[in-house]
Length: 438
Image (cartoon, rainbow, N blue to C red; front, top):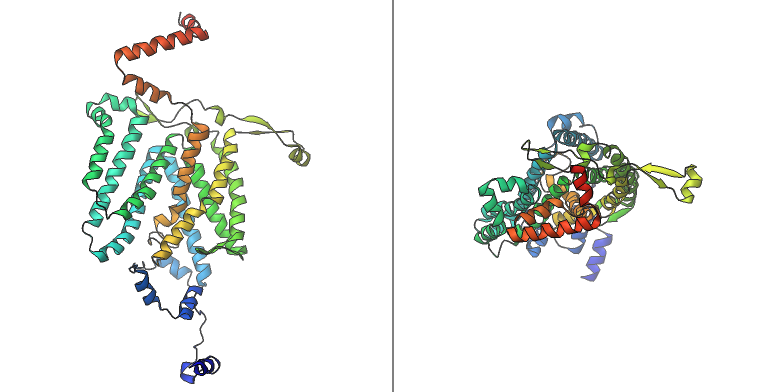
C-alpha cells in the first residue's frame, strides 16, 4: 500500500490527470481535500444545517454595463455605486430631522432582527421547534416596549404626566414589561435572546445618543462609514498583508490607511457640524407648542476655544495656538474607536457567517449583502458612544430631578424646598434673584 501511494503521487494514471482550471479553489477547499473530508461530511459532523445562500441580486442594468470587467473590478464598481446611493440616502434622512432618523433606526433594527432570525429558523426548524418565528417577533415587541417606554418617560416626562393612561403605564412600566416577557418565555429560545441583546439593545443606545444631539449620532456613524470605505480602498489598491483569518480580504494596509483617514475625517466633520444648533442641541418636547424641538444655547463643548500647541508642532507649523471646538478633541476618541475596535464587530459577524457557511446575512443590498452586513460595526460603536457620553460628557439631568421631586409626597417636597432655599440664601444667590425680580 505504501508503495502504491508513493507511485500514485509520482505517476498518476491518464484517467486521473488533474484538469487545468483558472481557479483551483480557495485555501479552505484545498484543506478539506487534503484532510480527506468532503464538504457534506463536515456539515454532518458539525451538526450545523445548511442555510440557503441567497442568489445574486445585482440589478440587471449593472450586470450588463459591467459585463466586460473581471469579477474583482465588477464587485468594486457595484459596491461603489451602491455606497454612493446609501450615502445620498443618509444625507436625505438627516435633512428630514431627528424624528425621521429615529424611525429609520427602528426600521434597520427590525430588518437586522429579521435577517438573523431567518438564519436561526433554518437551524431550529430542523428540530421542529414550534412557534419559533412567532414568539421571536413577540419578544422583539416586548423588548422594544420596555426600552422605549423607559426612554419616553425619561426624556418626555411632562408629556407623560399630562395623560392619565400614560401616567399609569409609566408608573407600572417595568412590571408590565416583565409580565409580557414571562408570557412568552421558553428555555429553548436562546438564539432569540442573543439576537435581541445584539440588535435591540444597541439600536436603543443609538436613539439615546440621538436624543443628546444629532452630532452624537451623525459623527460616530460617519466615522464608521468612512473607515469602512477607506479601509476597502486602501486594501483594494495596496493590500498585501492579511490582517485576520476570519476575514481573509482584510489587510493591514487597509486597516492602517482607514485609521488615519478616519481621524482626519472625524476632526473635519466635527468642525463643520459643531457650528450649527440643529446638530448640537438635544431633542426636547416643547409644552407650549406641543411639538419636539431642537433649539438651545450651545454648551461650552461647542464653543470655539484657543489651545496651545506642543513645542514640536509649534516648531513645524509656526503657530503658538490653534482654535478648535472642544468636541473636535472628543471626535479623535470616537474616530480612534471606530477605526481600531469598531471593525471587530465586522470580524464577529464574519465568524458568525462562517459558522453557518454563508457569505452574507441577506442580499438586500447588491454587492454589500444584508442590512446587518452594513451595520455590524455600528452596533458596537453605539455602545461606546453611549458609555463615553455618560462617563465624560453628561452632567446631572434637571428634568430627571424634577421628575423625582414631583413623585414625592407634599411634606417631602416642602422639606426639599426649604433646604434648597436655605442653601441659596447661604450662597448669596436668593437675594440677588429677589432684587432682580423686584
